[in-house]
Amino acid sequence: MPRRVGPVSAALIAVALVTVGVVPASGSTVLTPGYTKNCPTAARLVFATRWHTHHLAPGVVLREGHRRDSTGFVRMHVLSVDVTNPALAFRPLVRKLTTRQQLSSFSGRRRLVAATNAGYFDWRTGAPLGAAVARGRPIVTTRARTNVVGFARNGLMQAGHLSAGGEIVASSSTRPLAGVNRARPGTGITAYTSRWGRASVVLPHVTVGRYVRNGSVVSAARRFGRAPRSGYLLVARGHSASHWLRHLQRPAQVRIRLGAHSDAPRPFRLAYAVGGQIVRDGRALPRLSCPRRYPKPARTAVGFADDGRRLILVAVDDNMRTALHGLDSVQLGKVMADLGAREAYLFDGGGSTTMLARMHRGARRLSLRTRTAERVERRVPLGFGIYRR
Image 1 (cartoon, rainbow, N blue to C red):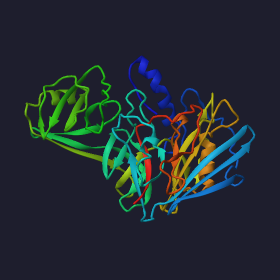
Image 2 (tube, one colour; image 1 turned 90 degrees about the horizontal axis):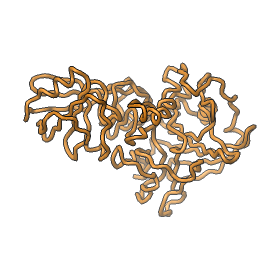
Image 3 (cartoon, one colour; image 1 turned 135 degrees about the vertical axis):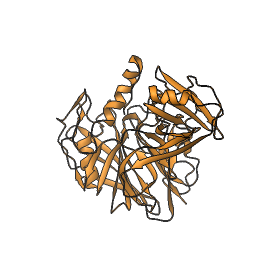
Image 4 (cartoon, rainbow, N blue to C red; image 1 turned 180 degrees about the horizontal axis):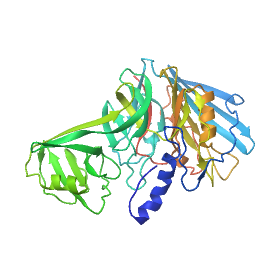
């Protein structure tokens, strides 16, 4: 979960930095402080587990099981979803990007079948990190290439990298966008939309902001940190970008095109940032890293099989006060590979690990299936929802 700011923020941010940066898409391991490659040996948990199976909806199966191992026991929750089933739909669970809420607050949506947490986020603002796409449009992007998993426009699952695209055109000149709704403004110009919410943008010391509404610059150049209810807040960082934005004459006409670059086979319709890759070509990646202090936290993983036709979501519980424990990256990769995943990635973890399911169609609310050491459901900014149409 990466991020950067002054000395106090850096302490909060360090947790996120460590988790996201552990396993790059290349499969090589970048060790960060507190991590080691000397992880526990992966056991074969899937085939020795007694599973309890629940059919939640056409094409949606939840399997849950307990399994003892050498250090205690593991409790796993596995959602297997036929994404080609026309009776299903997949949507983000989000209000504003910086508004954290328990996923169970969405339980009142009658067609919602199951939900999980979705990706890493910035502790200070609550904003998702990396990238996110909804309805084919980027709602969060950064200039850095981010691992993402999601749905192509043909409805099948795919993985790839996503980075900021788009541009700003004003006064006969064009500037590239450095990102959209990113947790920290990067060098260049970042656009903040009404989807950001009411949390203040964490601004570096030297930035310039301008508001754009109805296609025109409507403010002077100042250090603005509030996203607008409509239109855009443009934040420039760096000499060149700041000079350009500061010298736009009010009411200059501005055209903003949000976009993203991707190396995926097809454009994404829905996509979420993920952490390190743990399964490639059906094989669990070896030599991944894990935390030295507590290598087996609660985890969420996402993957797909059958040429993108089957989604696999796994959540693993953990409670340090008992013999219940989670899984390190190596073990979770083994579990995902044994479940049939062709590709799989970390999808956040720790106290954010959440899986909810409507255990029978007439249930008024979704049931919280996961239990973590925090004992209460953590508030998160973004979730993944599986719906009946």
